[in-house]
Image: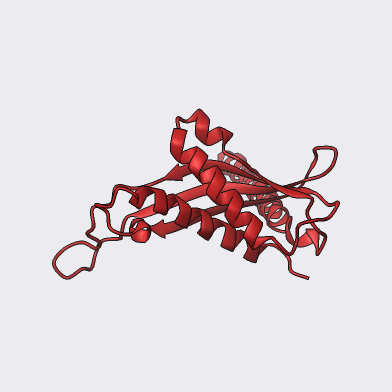
Length: 179
């Protein structure tokens, strides 16, 4: 009797687990298909929301990122702008600029260590006229921290922000359906 009850419990638990996994996989698949289901329609505009980043104390880099990313997105999506379609809203969750001191790799041989990377985490939302989210595309971009040039140059961090904004916009454009 004890084995039967335990066996039923485990069987029931497995079914719940497998069912939950299936639901999560289908939800992720539906979310990932969001942009592809949009088709070749045109966008009415592009906005960049760095509010979550500002709430975390992002300050000046967050404002610089907003300008750089908006410029990069306008260039990347120039062929899609000018319609009566939805607005492309990019909501930035985090920007991480790792300390970079000019040395990459670990140990004497250069193996065994990863280079420091900068990260930009956000999501693209296609927002309809009534404010409804039509599609969602999460995206994480990573670039080597050396992308801003020489670490001792005072403008290095500013160039790193511009570089990761350009990278993010380029990969988002690739994820967007083409004509």
